[in-house]
Amino acid sequence: MAEIEAVDVTRSYRMDGVSVDALRGVSLTIEEGDYAAIIGPSGSGKSTLMHLLGCLDRPTTGTLLVGGRDVGTLDDSELAELRNQTIGFVFQSFQLLARTTALDNVALPLVYRGVRRAERRKRAAEALDAVNLGHRVGHKPTQMSGGEQQRVAIARALVGEPSVLLADEPTGNLDTVNGDEVMGILERLNKERGVAVVLVTHEADIAARARRIIRVRDGLIEAVAEAPEPS
Amino acid sequence: MRVTESFRVAFDALRANRLRSLLTMLGVVIGVAAVVVLVAIGGGAKQLVTSEVEGLGSNIVFVVPGKFQIGTTPAVSRLQLSDADYLNRVLGRPDAVAVDLTSAEDLRAGTNTYYASVQGTTSNVVDVFDRPLAEGRYVSKADIATARRVIVLGPDAAAALFPNTDPIGRQVSMSGVEFRVIGLFQAKGGAFGVSPDTEVHIPVTAAQRLFGMDNISGFAVKADTPGDVDAVGAKLVDALKQKYQGDEFTAVSQTEILGTIGKILSMLTLVLAAIAGISLLVGGVGVSNIMLVSVRERTKEIGLRKALGARQRDVLSQFLLEAVMLTSIGGVIGIGLGIGASVTLSAFTPLPAVLAWWSIVLAFGVSVAVGVFFGVMPARRAGRLDPVVALRTE
Image (cartoon, rainbow over all chains, first blue to last red; front, top):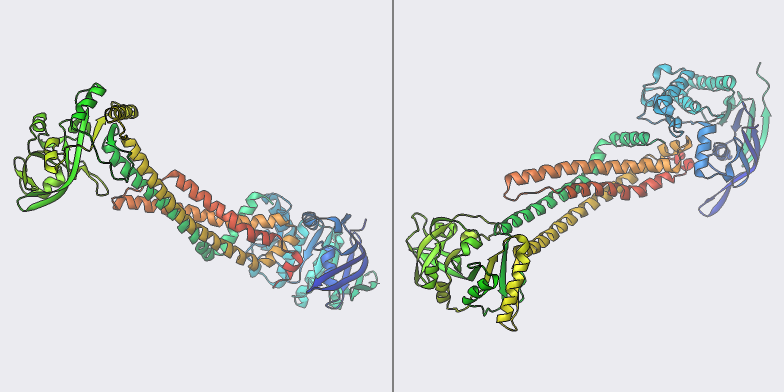
């Protein structure tokens, strides 16, 4: 079963009384263990697409199935639950709670799943280990480098064992070395755990690492390029 | 989200902005403290007055002509001194009925003067009103029979007229008529400018002559028990109505006076508490304001929490709990301050502040309610934020 399946999805907004069509009919499938990059210039609709794939938003028309559930028919609470269960978010600006330790930041998705504190912390520690930050559990984001912060964010995305990691410009705020490390971790998780990774980026060299590149322009999918299997 | 987790998150948020939280709380603290203190003062005043009036004797019933109400001028009396004997016969108790005829007069002894309530009385007044003497003797039956010009002084009157000498046997003049001091009352104390210690008593017959009256103001009877008061009063009123056809008489008991005063003071206490309550309300508006600022500041955090799976009600309850915590902590501090201020007032002023448990419970309840009421709007706003928009906020 496909993790995410979009069929002829559109999304329009009303801005100051004017209707804006951000997506004009997009169909795509994210398979289990997929590794895809969505690229496109700003204003192309790739952010809107990411919000839809991440269940932060509902399509105006068309069908969007995430984890087998029709996003368009779910209410806010059900959508929140679906996000919590199936999607792990990695943001360009990390989005960590500043006054909270790495461990508690990572444990946050489990809070909304009703997991007990002791269990949360145990699983958060494991997730931090998986991104090689086992030694930084008690540190706060302000005490960490950008690369470390993004690894904490990856651990947080990972802790709920989602089937899809949705990474929005994950290396946008990082230098090349840290960016490489973060990409390496995402790819390792994809390979070892079989979690589907969807990158949203405008950097061609980052996108080139994915197995599939989905090029978005003017609210439509312009092209899908299959990368050659890496040797 | 688990409840304990919600508490932890709310507490952390308050701690992160310590100064702001404290200042926001201040409005609630002041409001709650004011409610507790003002109610305590009102209660203290009530207790003070109650004990004063009770000191007069709770078994006593007064019978006066006309329809008597506190605050109205008594009706012109047709009652005679001989009616006392008639009422004694009605009750079947000799000497049960005390007589009263009161007028304010200037007293003079040498160069000292004193303006006092002069009461024309019968010999049984000391027993009915429980007024022990410190010295000398009280008005006797013989004094009344012969309208003898003798006088018994309350301690305040004695101190004013005879500051340096023993008053017994000395002369006091009223309207040029000389009275000989035969006794002194023991001090009883009083409040609000009304004290039996300022009274002076003379034989009722002498009073009638002095005031130029042939009637008396009313009667006072001591019932055996507080429960008998109403029955005794009714009996006396009936007897007097029979004798003076067409006239109205009223029996007033100590408890009725007490009840009226108590009602006035309770009302006053409520008004004070309500005024203090308004400041609590103002404090609540402050909480609402700060919570709105807090929601705006933390829009990104709200967006993130929602992206990670927080539902609308998770976010709502987080912010609501924060507001309620703010006001209930403020409430507890305010109660502490209020108790402290009440105790201090009792210790250093003559007014005994009496803490009322209901006011403490009410003040705390209201401060929690203020948190809910004024927290709900900002919390709903937080809960309804669109995660996409919230995450984009810089």
